[in-house]
Image (tube, rainbow, N blue to C red; front, side, top):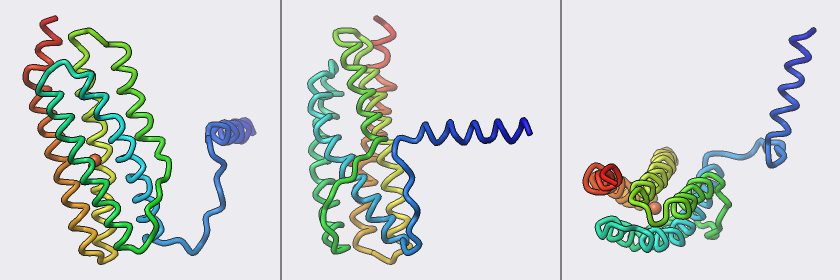
Amino acid sequence: MAAKKSARKSAKKSAARRTTPRKPAPKDKDLNDLFYDQLKDVYFAEKQILKALPKMAKAAQSRDLEAAFTKHFHETEGQVDRLEQVFRLIDKPARTKTCDAIMGILDEGKEVMDEYRGTEALDAGLLAAAQAVEHYEMARYGTMKAWAMQLGMHEVVRLIDETLEQERKTDKDLTILAEGAVNSEALAA
Ligand SMILES: [Fe+2]
């Protein structure tokens, strides 16, 4: 009896935690729909990242870090363009879908910029935020590549893979910066 009560309580609690009401799942949705949803999600994310990168470049104290953010800003412009090509290939309108995950990661980056402005630890914080963004993107593009392969969309796979490789390379470059000067400057301070 007590167990039943507490199960009911926790069900109530988790329902209260959900920010958006759960809609009944339509029975006719398939992997194509899931792919399109994910595409809209990552399209939204890339557009937010395009807004954030110039601010991060401006805030960076190390020239190398500033250059890395600026380089990735230009790559991101190309990634947005590639996503628009994917929308055309699947014959769907290029729409965005709000992605709470990337908003949360970017908000953390903003917090670091505000709270560590003018300190030696700022660049280390910016690097951490940027790597969280890259890992989010690698997860998304990795999944989308696998789904596109399953759906037999070869040109889409090629486009997604090009972006995925860019994200991986950016992540590696950021790791090199993190292991080099940026974090040792923070430590020395
Ligand atoms: Fe990206």
